[in-house]
Image (cartoon, rainbow, N blue to C red; front, top):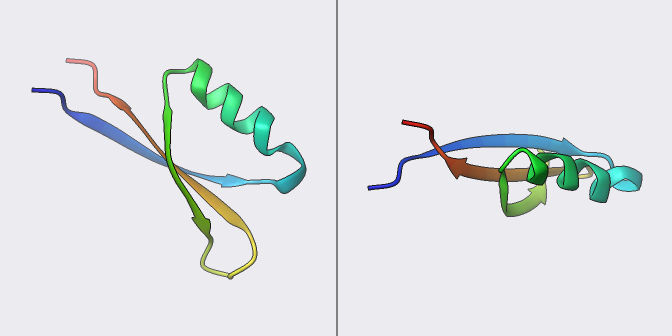
Length: 52
């Protein structure tokens, strides 16, 4: 059975692609992007298989 680890990452609007590309290179998969607690900034939720 696969187990997962998760990360939340604040996104800077003008650098969103670069941020997500970097996390993707490290094996993270984007799950969802939502508004942050302040209602203006974006937060990315990512997951990747946990190493056993």
